[in-house]
Length: 317
Image (cartoon, rainbow, N blue to C red; front, side, top):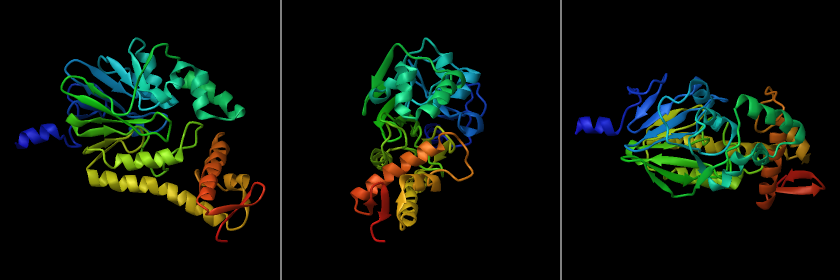
């Protein structure tokens, strides 16, 4: 029984013995292909799920693009369609690609992908070239889609799709019961917190997805960025609480800031998402979008009022 338990529920110290990949972690039929710096952007942690008759690669990262896939792959699944989750497709040109139906537009053309971000023209022009040149973007002519609750039988291993929108409309988590593992994609549990600032993002949906993640029946929780693999349900739930709390902290800080009347531009320049030291050309766009999202919600809740056109104040001030 003890031996069977160790095989069924691998520990964090077990390393893959049949995949040639630095720092690979094997969890039964799941192998985590650890990205550079444990998946620090622009890299990420990809996942292989191997059954007796099919092998699926989830989110082929920039590290996969640079190293190549370590084994034959039958299909590619995407947790969502963003630039850093697709570069490895370029190494697997004849392998079918699947994503949630709500994100498929991002695979059909570079214009489709750019529409998901909703960047201002001055930022989009540079980012468009970066996606093509640095992330190997190529439109996919044949894209399959899946939906919430779909189950894929690979032979002795299953992938169960859980739709977790918010980051994108089609973001999904993948549960692999035989590994007691779930791949969370960009529900990354980092101190930065949830990212819901694209044109196709939704703060409310993100919060609902975080609630749904609490019921995922797993012991190992794999993130595409930063945290890598969290083993132990209690640790995961604690980290999920901290991750979600960032949303509350952003709103609390905004409410405090708006005790004196402020504009969207005032809030954006104050920064509630990025530290003042971060100097990237899209920061102003993200901060402006964040301010609009949160102020709209706080107004709906009666916690912020518009005192004059485009000027807002905390309701109890």
